[in-house]
Length: 152
Image (cartoon, rainbow, N blue to C red; front, side, top):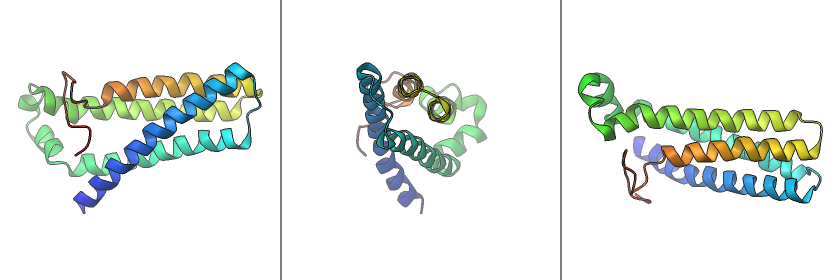
């Protein structure tokens, strides 16, 4: 079961990144060109947030089942000294949760804005900050905090 969830997580995370980059691109394009906030733009906003929430739920399931996390919490004093374990035990969780919070807030605030320009600007700002946080929280192969290969 854990392996199936891990595979699904590996797939959904790419959808989250792609949809987030696409939403930022559409928001930038709409803001600069002063276009109307269409039904398609609203769907992009909505589905980007929805995918992020699905990814959060999968991530929480994996976090609860991970042997690294179980080690981290049962050996906390030693584990916080190991940067890889500390990264996955706490840093990754906190940063990704904050990023999804920014996506959620950005989506909610954009939905409630009165003008099309304000909707695009709000999406652009909040989603861009979320993407920046996600890039920090990803265990890139070159990261000094923790690294994993691009594809497992």
